[in-house]
Length: 158
Image (cartoon, rainbow, N blue to C red; front, top):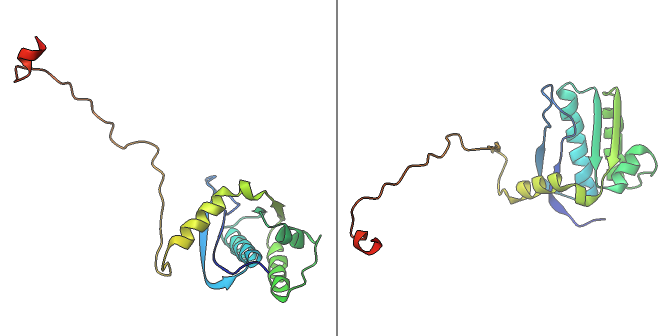
């Protein structure tokens, strides 16, 4: 089993009605292996997608084990994996179409950055953090002209 962790993150793989990607970070208050963290993120992502009305869901994971178990290629053997897989099977019935794809770890940068954000927070039980992207300054920088008058440097400039 992978080393215990207290953090996980997942990029939410559906778009809302305005076309925006929904992303979230999860911080665990319990120990979880990497695969358990992947399953937790997938379960929460599927629930959120269903609650927001998604009918088609495309999920991504960098865990080969989780992807292959969800696809049915691998059989779950550990009790915790069997229980997670059963939750996924139940949640899949809520969608007209569900697909999970494995992506290389290096292409999972968004989830990694969300994981780092979640793990850096000491106590996030009562916190909601909104990060807003500001593409440019709200007020343009004004360029003020400089006029040179007579001052103590004037004699040396002439």
